[in-house]
Image 1 (cartoon, rainbow, N blue to C red):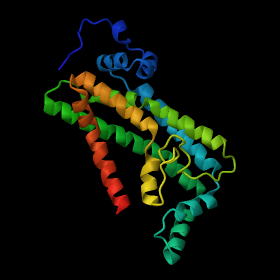
Image 2 (image 1 turned 90 degrees about the horizontal axis):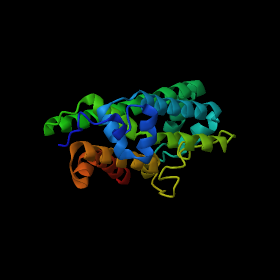
Image 3 (image 1 turned 135 degrees about the horizontal axis):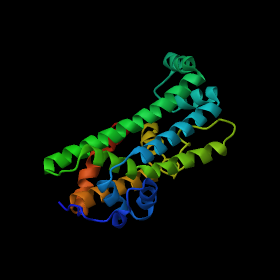
Image 4 (image 1 turned 45 degrees about the vertical axis):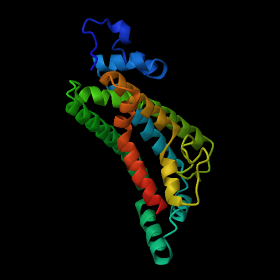
Length: 245
């Protein structure tokens, strides 16, 4: 696989300045990937994305009309009827708005971190099987940086919250960049969950990760795409299958 020239000047790959890398990951990804490999770092992209997600999630639950939220959430589960519906309503009400806020804020951060770690572990395993010398730290840095566009999701959510001061805002409608809000909706509520979980920004981040893997591994676009995207295709394929059946 291609290696960076150890004598290569930092200026040729964007240097080790995280702010430079942040700009390059959007405007000049190739330079950013070279810089990340030479100077793996994750503090800036990881903290920025995690803090933005926690803030916008906390804001959402803080302004939420909680009674309306319970009714809206349960209305999207057609299998709940009668006594089961009342039990579910009582269970959600017992959590309280503050409880939901804490669960939402901590859950969003922990789930995001778990996804990053799983992505990194998978790529590290593939690299080890290939005999590459790239380490976990480098892959984790690449995962964090390629997910930096997630900031646009937080920005989209913040705008949506501002436009809905009543607090009657479904979590399905929160992310304006999701496939669900871009018109991919179905009478099947389970399938709508899949559409709501996918967004244009996710495709952008995955495209960056494919490009970064391709550059680091020195492989073709097809092989890089197959390597990086296979876990996602399996997960969402199984999820979609369950939704349809």
